[in-house]
Length: 242
Length: 353
Image 1: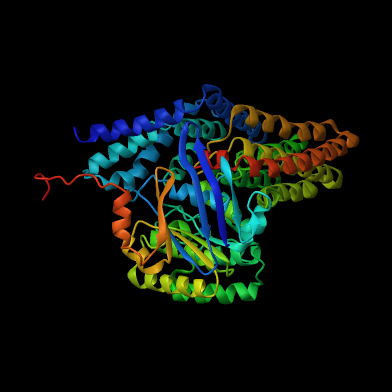
Image 2 (image 1 turned 180 degrees about the vertical axis):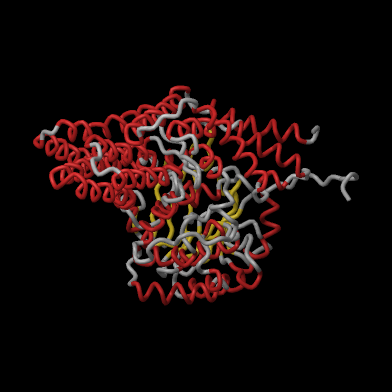
């Protein structure tokens, strides 16, 4: 198993954001982690990637316990976090050249891979723009490239396609499918049900900090499963609008 | 005016909450530290205008005029007339307590300084949207380069650089320069940069701190990277001052200032690392940093004074003893800070926007 989490709980004071999540994602699998705003998706991803310390539960990634050896886990994963985690004072290119050596790549390997990723994600012309001055989409694509640069065994992507132009989003999807075909596990959170349904093989739906449904895509339409568990606010008329 | 009311009220509320969100002791401590640093600087500049408030008023006027001509910032997003925008910008300056401290302190140095400070408050001469700023040496490790690049955009660092250059100008102009200046200036430089040491993650903000946590680095690695950046930043002005002292006052005094500078670097590295993981605060480019709690600030102030007193005493054994002690303090506190960073990462992250 690439991702194995058991009994994950996260409390912030008296508020329980995640209330006992169990997850298993195998090698070569793309797993969609779905749910409404505030369901606890990002909090779960943060616990799986070491940004947050679980109140309870265990996380094992690529066979390594996150609590026992966090640095080894971080070296084996790639993460596109919710807030992108970029440094305003570094250029897009510098982010990649910063990351490569820290993951054990040589300067030449880093430059070659970084150049290829930036070209494929249509960031080449803006490579010398500082992240603080780059658009949201450029920043997100840079964070995505950073996540892939060291060829991770497991990839965590928090809302990877939101704010991305269609051609780059298509290229990102291709990269993810190829990566999974070579044995990596990909864990994606998203609100875009149509996109997720075409991309993922398995899914979990989170609501109120708990997994309320999980399964394989193709068995039942994802929208049907999703809205079977997540209630929509009732339709209303807006006579003052328009 | 009716439309402007809520906007102006919002600005005042933001300032008020900035003040009331922190303890009075913290605010008082910061102001005291700034004034103390200015008073120490007076020993070097040896010039005190009789009516500093005159400069404060002039500086406010300049800031207002210049800001009204600047590019449209946040107020520009509202449907305001030109007059309305000017009024909002004036309010921004007047309700900012930092304006008053900045202008007061600068007026103590020179009657012209508030005018320069007023101009410095205007972002457009230094930050134009899309303008590329100094990239810094490209061969430095990226994390170090990133910290140095962010730090040189803080007024704290600019002022330290300005003090170092003022000292060089004084030494060039005055062949018989005061010996006291040689040991006071490194202390002033260290104090004026102490906010940077005490808020190591301040320039990264929360998202940058997240990246540190995602990279395969231990807490100790992160602290070492931050310390290296601080040492580079402080070594530049301190090195310049040391060279000038060697030139004007001879080898003995020069060596004394080098020892004093090394001690200051070690003390700030250790205490800064410890404080950064205990009371992290955000720092904004082209603004003075917010600073930490008054206890940590005053402790840094006291620590920075120790090497100065040792240098002033003339006793070499005392200078070496304090250097050794500073080395031990730096080593222990940095190691402890690395461990604490891993345990307190959520608290640190929560304090950074």
